[in-house]
Length: 600
Ligand code: ADP
Image 1 (cartoon, helix red, strand yellow):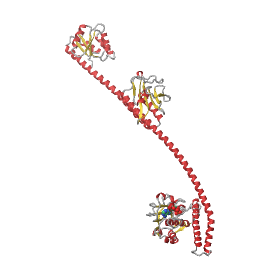
Image 2: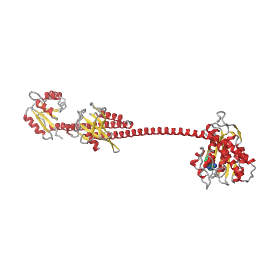
Image 3: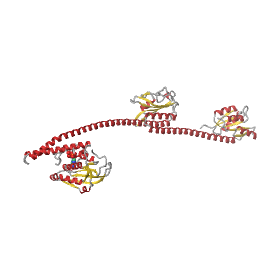
Image 4: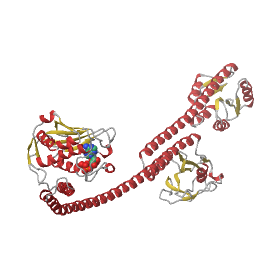
């Protein structure tokens, strides 16, 4: 630290000399003035700890000098000790204090007293200097704190903006204007690589000049051409404290006042998007803590750009996907319409064919029967057997043709229904009676469970319901090996949740036959579908694995449908060796609703 300075003022040189000698005892620097005017000049130039002023001086006496010192802001606080030989009375002392003296010494003075007084002021001076230094440090700390707070606030604000904004253009606009206005920079811009990455274009800009985001500015990516391109190519921050001394500085016409510049690469997850460029009109404008804060900002901006780009990619993908789904749906709808048309053509064809076949078939069957009955052939003769074959074949074909017509009628909704109250157990009894011979031939049992007899009577179209259960039992016979068991059970259940409600009966026809693979359990209810196509042995209605046209279950489903019921099958799978069996469930409402009876 500098030695404290002491100003001694006296018009007599020997006094000045003596005083200086005396003061040498202290660690101080003494400066002499032999007149008031000279003392004034020195006091304005130097920072004295105390002035020792002789009162009696020609031209400007001590009092006048101190009055002038008090009148000037920079010297007003200078402590003054008046020294006087002649005017040592009360009056002059007071005058001295009035003029601004802090102390008063009469000549001849005791050197120790003078030294101890001066020492007090020197100590005060030291203290004042320390205080000033402290205040200075505090000011600096305060300033840096204010700046850090501002930086943090800006970072936080940018953070909030970047997370909430997925529109890249709007986002960058907001960020550059925020950074520029908060820190008062001359110019803040974001330069991004163009699509082919051969130039950096100004995407967003804010500044105290004419250069704004609207300016279509592009600069070369060559690292030697600009600070911006250099930062991008090296992926390093480039700080230029004085653009006048930097060859990389690229002067832009719109930014004539730039004195220093910093360029920060915008990089997120190793992907480089461009550069955050900040220019200041002050030399050396970017302190190290600024660089740190700007780096955080640049990182946030880069993440935001990445997010925004990912978002727009997802939006594009979504739109693409939606378009494809639209296209596929349209294709499917078209295919469905074509299928519907085909199906209806098929139904028309079946109807026409069935009708056309019925007449000749009736003839074949009638004449065959007549010949059988009236032809006079022996029962075991060759012709008799051939004729029986013809009649049986015609019967079978008749059944098939009838099934086809049933199917077509069910599909077109042209079924004549005659609802009446029916006892299902009686229906099954009668069915069992009609197939007794077949059951015997195939060594099969058909058990009607006791619960079947507890069922309430149901309101149904008796003819079609008889067809339905005959089909299920005949199927059970067909797909169960000789010696197997068929069981029919029934119970009362509440109506399904998706139906009109009311009491229902559930009939289950189960067998211990070959079973049905799970993936076919829905398909077998579609017309002409047969699961065991390859296994078929014959076209008999009752032989094991006798083939059929694949219409039985489709008709069954149609019949259940017009009664407002449901039909489905349960089976562990198809296996001829282990015969896991099948269970066909039929759910029928006990009563039909009053209105809207299905059918005509
Ligand atoms: P089909 O004239 O072929 O018998 P259905 O519509 O009656 O036609 O049956 C369709 C297919 O369902 C049959 O080909 C058969 O594979 C399967 N199926 C029907 N009932 C049974 C059953 N009880 N056990 C095993 N498979 C069955």
